[in-house]
Image (cartoon, rainbow over all chains, first blue to last red):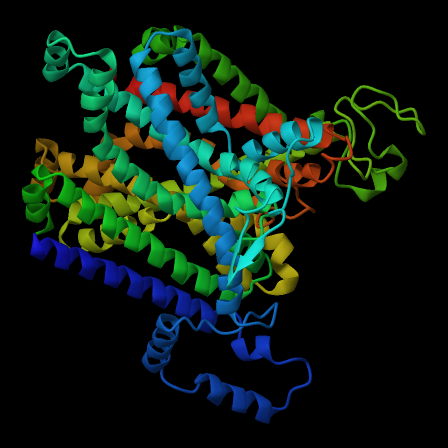
Length: 327
Length: 304
């Protein structure tokens, strides 16, 4: 068990080092940083001074090491386009993305589990059939079209909800929240549904198939034979055993929620990290791209690691297999 | 004659004929592909030739004569008086070209990587599959965005609009090779120990000849399935990137670019600029997806 943990952590570190190398190469070789930072009027002395100041005259491994050290301290340099430290930009934008991801994650989880249970118990009911068919269409709809469709219905035609931005936000220290105002909460609805819909269908289908699998087993039949109520059988016995895979998938989907937030934030002009990143790609703002890459890979690797370790901790059957496979 | 008859009576053809939704999907795919390929012949206007555009025709609703010029357009016009029907045909051409080229790139990369990893084994296998694992941790659309940004940074600024289509192909292709590599590697591991491979080795055929002439033909059917579903994914990925403004430029608009342009007019009531490109994209992606699903079930005897 311990060997497995150490091995997994070690692998994660190597992945991060490789991603760091990619981010650093971006920084160093895509466009000339000196060119990007100095204006049109520059002398050779300016160039030489900045070169020494940025450490570009040092050998490659030294520069890479310095980049990693700076990144670990949260220092990613200055945005070419906005002229402000990238770290400040990220901190300013993070609350918007995290609140959006949180709400859509909760939506996906609660909606997915509820619908999954319903469609499993009422397998042949017309509403369950309808939900299953609708979910098939939902999976093949691209995220940005779902967003546009929702804007069309609820913002343009009905005029109930805002189509862009976060509404009014309240600042608590450096954190800005949209949870405390009516317009902030209203602004959250459409983006969260857009972002969470795909994950919701995924969780729903998973819960449904797991539930159907479990409901067929003997202990459920015995529970019924003992005269337990339908509710106790479904929720007390069946649901509990479907949740392990759901936890894993949810954990892994957390990462893609953050990534797909880029699309949702663009559709709704949501002032989050994703919008910052897509603007950076449009204008080839390398420091922002490199920082986003480092940040998101750190999150992905951490989530994967935690899910893997949790899985082994929750399900004792996996301990032997996994440890053996890792060797 | 005999060959045609055999094709008609094959399992594949039987399962195709007995699935109405697949026949419908295939029909839609043929119609849309034909529209895209024949765009210069079918399109009533040449939408990206400024000389033929008349600004007075701007914002003409579908099927109604324009108030100034009296001209009628099937699907209306956009802000600059471009015929939407022609713009969609040409846009689909770009979407499909990018989709096919990206899948082809992913297929070649993935098949070669999978064959080599599976057949050679050892440290070559470890390195290739580690890279694949790392890339699989990240959603492919994110990888495509990153590659697009890097490639954009590497091309000189005045070339960026012309290169955008090729950059798009490379970014989607490079983000999708892992699926192919994993499946081909798995199939190769099975085939590697078959007798025909041992026989080929015994008569002294070279490693590359065994890999590409003997093993490859035996792993093609899963590759075909992934390529079909991959085409639908690539079309959606292209549309998403173009919609986000990191794909096809406004001078060469794909379906995604048209949707991006159309979104701006949603609030002022010009719904058709958005609606028709969006529906075309949806029908295209859904039909290709349905064909892929059918192919997966038809080619996999275990699912019958």
